[in-house]
Image (cartoon, rainbow, N blue to C red):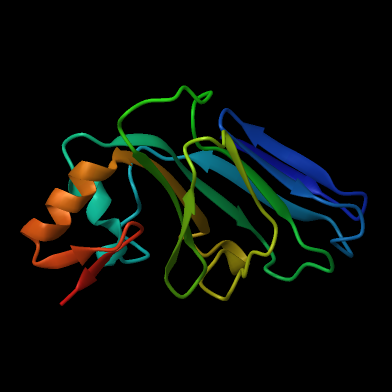
Length: 170
Protein backbone atom coordinates (compact mmCIF):
# COMPACT_ATOMS: atom_id res chain seq x y z
CA UNK A 1 0.00 0.00 0.00
CA UNK A 2 1.15 3.52 -0.73
CA UNK A 3 -0.42 6.61 0.81
CA UNK A 4 0.54 10.25 0.33
CA UNK A 5 -0.68 13.80 0.03
CA UNK A 6 -0.59 15.39 -3.41
CA UNK A 7 -1.06 19.10 -4.07
CA UNK A 8 -1.53 21.37 -7.11
CA UNK A 9 1.92 20.40 -8.42
CA UNK A 10 0.63 16.87 -9.04
CA UNK A 11 2.29 13.56 -8.37
CA UNK A 12 2.08 9.81 -8.78
CA UNK A 13 1.33 6.73 -6.72
CA UNK A 14 2.95 3.50 -7.90
CA UNK A 15 2.68 -0.16 -6.97
CA UNK A 16 3.87 -3.15 -9.02
CA UNK A 17 1.42 -3.40 -11.94
CA UNK A 18 -0.21 0.01 -11.56
CA UNK A 19 0.62 3.72 -11.59
CA UNK A 20 -1.84 6.54 -10.88
CA UNK A 21 -0.76 9.95 -12.16
CA UNK A 22 -2.36 13.16 -10.88
CA UNK A 23 -1.26 15.85 -13.36
CA UNK A 24 -0.16 19.36 -12.34
CA UNK A 25 -3.19 21.62 -11.99
CA UNK A 26 -5.64 18.77 -11.31
CA UNK A 27 -6.08 19.83 -7.67
CA UNK A 28 -6.57 23.17 -5.95
CA UNK A 29 -5.31 22.06 -2.55
CA UNK A 30 -3.45 19.18 -0.94
CA UNK A 31 -5.42 15.91 -0.89
CA UNK A 32 -4.65 12.52 0.69
CA UNK A 33 -4.52 9.56 -1.71
CA UNK A 34 -4.20 5.83 -1.09
CA UNK A 35 -3.39 3.07 -3.57
CA UNK A 36 -3.51 -0.54 -2.43
CA UNK A 37 -3.31 -4.00 -3.91
CA UNK A 38 -6.14 -6.25 -2.72
CA UNK A 39 -6.24 -10.04 -2.35
CA UNK A 40 -9.87 -10.31 -3.51
CA UNK A 41 -12.56 -8.21 -5.13
CA UNK A 42 -14.40 -6.28 -2.38
CA UNK A 43 -17.95 -7.48 -1.67
CA UNK A 44 -18.92 -3.80 -1.52
CA UNK A 45 -19.48 -2.57 -4.21
CA UNK A 46 -21.64 -5.52 -5.31
CA UNK A 47 -20.30 -7.81 -8.01
CA UNK A 48 -22.57 -8.24 -11.01
CA UNK A 49 -22.66 -10.82 -13.82
CA UNK A 50 -19.68 -9.22 -15.55
CA UNK A 51 -17.56 -11.05 -13.01
CA UNK A 52 -18.41 -14.58 -14.14
CA UNK A 53 -14.78 -14.77 -15.34
CA UNK A 54 -13.86 -15.10 -11.64
CA UNK A 55 -15.54 -18.51 -11.43
CA UNK A 56 -13.32 -20.05 -14.11
CA UNK A 57 -10.83 -22.62 -12.81
CA UNK A 58 -8.24 -21.56 -15.40
CA UNK A 59 -8.17 -17.80 -15.01
CA UNK A 60 -5.36 -15.54 -13.93
CA UNK A 61 -5.83 -12.62 -11.57
CA UNK A 62 -3.21 -10.13 -12.74
CA UNK A 63 -4.09 -7.59 -10.06
CA UNK A 64 -6.87 -6.12 -7.93
CA UNK A 65 -6.32 -2.51 -6.90
CA UNK A 66 -8.18 0.17 -4.95
CA UNK A 67 -7.47 3.87 -5.39
CA UNK A 68 -9.15 6.18 -2.91
CA UNK A 69 -8.90 9.83 -2.03
CA UNK A 70 -10.52 12.65 -0.13
CA UNK A 71 -11.92 14.07 -3.37
CA UNK A 72 -13.67 12.90 -6.52
CA UNK A 73 -13.42 16.25 -8.29
CA UNK A 74 -10.38 16.92 -10.47
CA UNK A 75 -9.70 19.95 -12.69
CA UNK A 76 -7.74 17.73 -15.10
CA UNK A 77 -8.22 14.01 -15.72
CA UNK A 78 -6.13 11.62 -13.68
CA UNK A 79 -4.36 8.81 -15.52
CA UNK A 80 -4.17 5.16 -14.49
CA UNK A 81 -1.68 2.84 -16.19
CA UNK A 82 -2.13 -0.89 -15.63
CA UNK A 83 0.10 -3.84 -16.49
CA UNK A 84 -2.37 -6.20 -18.19
CA UNK A 85 -0.43 -8.79 -20.17
CA UNK A 86 3.05 -10.29 -20.18
CA UNK A 87 5.22 -9.56 -23.23
CA UNK A 88 3.38 -10.92 -26.29
CA UNK A 89 4.24 -14.36 -27.68
CA UNK A 90 2.07 -15.75 -30.51
CA UNK A 91 0.04 -18.79 -29.49
CA UNK A 92 -2.82 -20.91 -30.81
CA UNK A 93 -4.89 -20.12 -27.69
CA UNK A 94 -6.83 -16.88 -27.63
CA UNK A 95 -6.42 -15.21 -24.24
CA UNK A 96 -8.98 -12.58 -23.22
CA UNK A 97 -7.69 -9.87 -20.91
CA UNK A 98 -10.28 -7.71 -19.22
CA UNK A 99 -10.01 -4.72 -16.90
CA UNK A 100 -13.07 -4.10 -14.71
CA UNK A 101 -13.43 -0.63 -13.22
CA UNK A 102 -15.89 0.29 -10.47
CA UNK A 103 -17.02 3.80 -11.40
CA UNK A 104 -19.26 4.52 -8.42
CA UNK A 105 -22.37 3.11 -10.15
CA UNK A 106 -21.31 -0.27 -11.49
CA UNK A 107 -18.47 -2.17 -13.07
CA UNK A 108 -17.36 -1.14 -16.54
CA UNK A 109 -15.36 -3.67 -18.53
CA UNK A 110 -12.57 -2.85 -20.97
CA UNK A 111 -11.14 -5.61 -23.11
CA UNK A 112 -7.43 -5.45 -23.87
CA UNK A 113 -5.84 -7.35 -26.80
CA UNK A 114 -3.27 -9.92 -25.67
CA UNK A 115 -0.69 -8.12 -27.84
CA UNK A 116 -0.81 -5.04 -25.55
CA UNK A 117 1.11 -5.16 -22.28
CA UNK A 118 -0.41 -2.03 -20.74
CA UNK A 119 -3.69 -0.14 -20.60
CA UNK A 120 -3.89 3.58 -19.87
CA UNK A 121 -7.24 4.91 -18.61
CA UNK A 122 -7.69 8.68 -18.56
CA UNK A 123 -11.43 9.37 -18.62
CA UNK A 124 -12.41 7.99 -15.25
CA UNK A 125 -15.77 8.88 -13.79
CA UNK A 126 -15.24 9.06 -10.05
CA UNK A 127 -18.85 9.27 -8.91
CA UNK A 128 -20.07 9.57 -5.33
CA UNK A 129 -19.52 5.87 -4.68
CA UNK A 130 -15.92 5.98 -5.90
CA UNK A 131 -13.95 7.25 -2.96
CA UNK A 132 -15.27 10.63 -1.83
CA UNK A 133 -14.62 11.35 1.81
CA UNK A 134 -12.99 7.99 2.39
CA UNK A 135 -15.89 5.90 1.03
CA UNK A 136 -14.55 2.37 1.55
CA UNK A 137 -15.08 1.10 -2.02
CA UNK A 138 -12.73 3.59 -3.63
CA UNK A 139 -12.03 3.21 -7.32
CA UNK A 140 -11.61 -0.54 -7.79
CA UNK A 141 -9.64 -1.86 -10.78
CA UNK A 142 -9.52 -5.60 -11.48
CA UNK A 143 -7.30 -7.15 -14.17
CA UNK A 144 -8.19 -10.71 -15.19
CA UNK A 145 -7.05 -13.02 -18.03
CA UNK A 146 -8.56 -16.29 -19.25
CA UNK A 147 -8.52 -18.52 -22.34
CA UNK A 148 -11.46 -17.69 -24.60
CA UNK A 149 -12.58 -21.33 -24.89
CA UNK A 150 -13.07 -21.41 -21.10
CA UNK A 151 -15.12 -18.20 -21.21
CA UNK A 152 -17.26 -19.64 -24.01
CA UNK A 153 -17.82 -22.93 -22.12
CA UNK A 154 -18.68 -21.20 -18.82
CA UNK A 155 -21.07 -18.82 -20.58
CA UNK A 156 -22.85 -21.75 -22.29
CA UNK A 157 -23.12 -23.58 -18.95
CA UNK A 158 -24.87 -20.53 -17.49
CA UNK A 159 -27.37 -20.44 -20.36
CA UNK A 160 -25.79 -17.43 -22.01
CA UNK A 161 -24.30 -16.64 -25.41
CA UNK A 162 -20.61 -15.71 -25.69
CA UNK A 163 -20.19 -12.67 -27.95
CA UNK A 164 -16.40 -12.69 -28.00
CA UNK A 165 -16.29 -10.02 -25.32
CA UNK A 166 -19.14 -10.73 -22.90
CA UNK A 167 -21.69 -13.33 -21.83
CA UNK A 168 -25.18 -12.23 -22.85
CA UNK A 169 -28.22 -13.74 -21.18
CA UNK A 170 -30.83 -15.14 -23.55
